Image 1: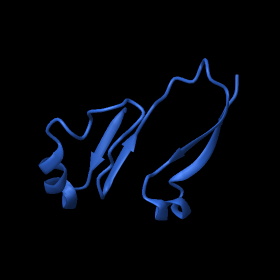
Image 2: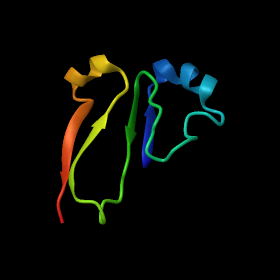
Image 3: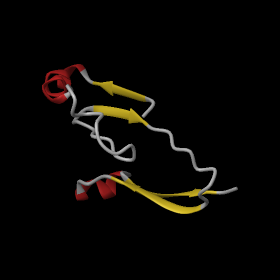
Image 4: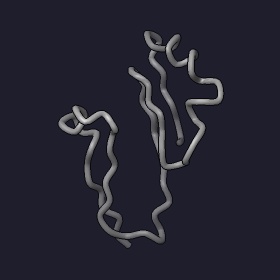
Length: 73
């Protein structure tokens, strides 16, 4: 993850879980709290083809949080 932006309105919620929880776990998984924006980077040099990124809230599919991206050599 390159960057996390936390809105002032949701800072208290973020601080309640931020200690040892928010950025722990697998490197391909990011917890994004309400009102946050994150920027991620992934090395794709050895992996070409069609991939998908998604949010685990199913209603987000229609809001651009579930899309394909293609890595070309």
